[in-house]
Length: 507
Figure 1 (cartoon, rainbow, N blue to C red):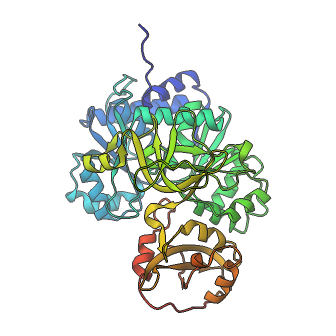
Figure 2: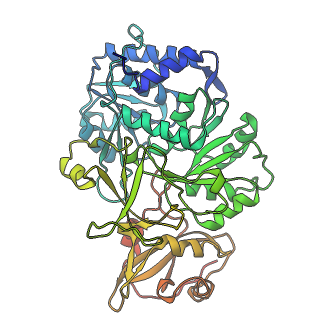
Figure 3: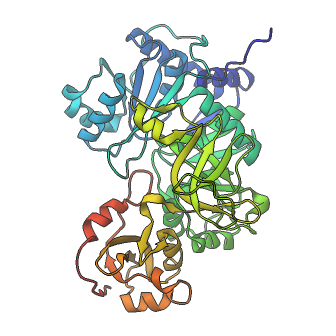
């Protein structure tokens, strides 16, 4: 009888190190490790964790910026059959307390810049042990020992929490493996790729859109501590970067950097963007530079791949999130649960496949509400065109009903982003006695620019139905965003949800 392959994180990484020991695996701040060196460090940290009492099923947390020690701790924990819990380094002390204690973290690994924060909340945490990311290994190195199976939880990744408390999505070894198989069959990941990652590794996009795929394939990962447009524009030509995952905000900030126009970005064959719908004007800006930006769609709970737009359709289907990969099914449902089959008819996106999470950590009711009859209900609204390409409209909760009409803020934002005075904009609905909800645009304008409500309405009128045009305009220095770049619309609704509908101007 054939033996099933070890598809755990540590299983495939250790096998990659055996097959490609001298290939460049990881570059960080000018230092490069081979796969052999990467494996040696994983073995050492696994020994440190074991010496500190970490055993199968225990949770190992990580608090810190992007750093090679994050990935070493991830694979080392998996080698012991433990569960890795990455922490959002931008959270406040009380928010970190909640996640650490909710997950029941046994050992917390802390990066240098976050020692003070960890120390300030240490007495409130359940942790048995604390390690500093730059500490030398202790204990005997641990060789691969197949301690974690396909169905075992590898990572508990807490959702970004744009509303309410974050929930811990339990991602198994199998979820991550099959997501990467899906991606390799769809995105043509190559062993000679150089992927740059500056998105936070605690987020599923930073960890598992190109990062883990590159390591599985034996490619070269260039890791940045955090996103910096100038560093991106410098390191793409320096390392001849071929792929990179970005969220829309990153695309926007890079395009606004003064060095963007003259930067050598010729090595890039694929920028993968996800996290939110991308304004078409931004996609076309990059296209004018000869850079193909391919939208993918996914969530933490789907490990994350749901759909992807391949190169062959990038121009014809600009703005689409593409089609599902081979191993994933996608369908749309109406509010009453019935299937939505007509082209361009909108419904909630539901996903089925081996990449769907095992559930939410210690939240059976939330799990049962999200996964029904094997289908994960995303909370996102989308539609398929006649050719089966998916377009994401917005979040169900962000949809505005004005005068009985459904308004999807992303559609309105896509138009408003074309206005030359606007640097960034978000559209929300606020209570209105006449219309139920009214459309409000919250904008940050470019330096020296002027904008009025009347001018914005006139600009939008040729492109939007009257009921979709903002009736109020508010200004901010910058839109509030969470750590993954998503606009915190609940913050905007709380701030601008009341008040008169008065036009404002700014310079």
